[in-house]
Image (cartoon, rainbow, N blue to C red):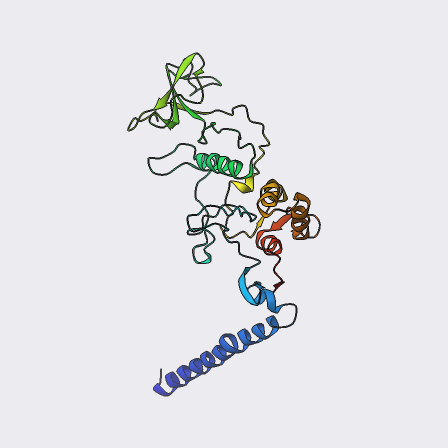
Length: 294
């Protein structure tokens, strides 16, 4: 190939690069940005910032914690759901837990997902004067899981199941934290508490449903984090659970709190998608009587 032809090709390529850079890297983003600044679109495009008293206090799309410096919930405010994003609702660390429904055994330094749910349920119940009992949780707020050790069936529909338990251990209740396991006996065998450094993986894991109903008083969103860790909303059921506590601390009637919550409750999208939700920040600003802008 002649040098002149090679130069022409490179010049053409450079010219195309410059033109596409101007169009795709400059003009197109500028047009999109200008369109986003049109009235009615500018608020969402700029982060859906919520202002109170002329100052930004958050975003209607990103949740936040209403706790003191020690992480203790402030009782005068509606509380958000748990968050796994950084130290809680950190937009720079948006994430979810990688724990799944089979994560039921506590580690030495890390509770299982089941125990996290059980503990959170007890904490919410204590704060709001509710019943924190839920299926597969002990009264002490850990996962109600047994390791059942004994000979197993080797064939038939019960293959792999322990046929005659000889030892049963409550794996999430260490002996140094409980005087007696949540269950006295299992199939006629005395239930033991877990001893440090003992391996109970040889046993069959048996989650115990317990006496709690399938619909616990503390709703699911009060004890589980969202996929992003930034969910700004809670369910109407969780909001309703907090009404009496907020009314008592603020010295107002429960009906006044319910009215504020109802004013900031959104229904299902298009009338049929998703579930109704309550925006926590909007409710708390309204409770404080602040004039809100966006």
